Length: 220
Image (cartoon, rainbow, N blue to C red; front, top):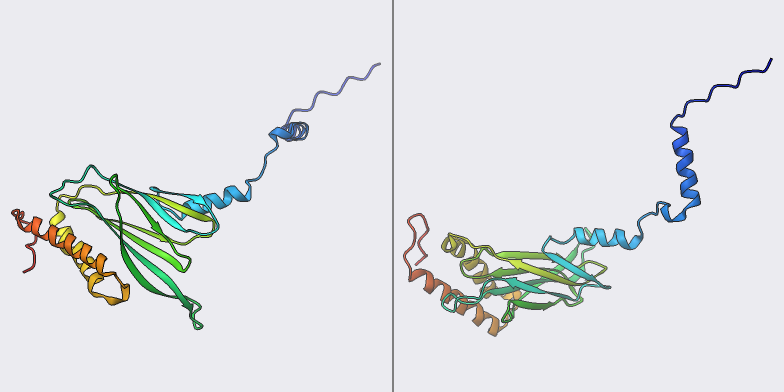
C-alpha cells in the first residue's frame, strides 16, 4: 500500500525572509545601501542653518551673501540698513579651554535690489548680521563658522510691523547708539556717520507724524 504524501507545511514568516534574501542576492540594484558620509555631512550642516539660509561646500566659511527681500524703498522713509557684528578669535583660555574673542562691527553696503556680500576673515569665529528697515521688523542672522561650509546665502525677510515707533525706540536706537559710542567695536568714522544719519532721519520722520495713543513718546 502506497504511503500518503505528507501534507504541505504552512508558509510562515520564514519564506518571506528567504525570498527577500534571494532577491537581494540576485539583484544587486535593490540591495539596500547605507547613506554615504557626504549625505550625512550635508544633513548635519543644513541643520545648523535657519530655513532661509543655504550654503555651498568649502573648507571654511569665507563669505555670507544674499538679498534683503523688500519692496522698492520709499525715498522719504530711507533705505534698509545692514550692521555686521563679528567675533574675532583672540586666544584660548587655559582654565576652561574656551575661546576668548574680541568684537568688531561695520555697516554693510546694500545694493539697488537688496543684495549684499559680507566677507568672513579666517580669525572670525561667529557673526551676527542685523537687518533693519523703516516700518519693518528687524531680522538677525547668527552664524558660527562651520567646517565644510564655504559660502552662506541668506534671504532676509522683514515683515511689516504696525508699531514700528515702539520697535525703533526700544530696540533699534539703543542697539545702534551703543555701537557708535562703544570703542571696542572699532567702528570707522564713515560707518559712525552712516548710522548717526540713519537714526537721525528715522527719529525726525517719527516725530513729524502723530503718535498713536498707546505708543510711547520719543525721549526728549
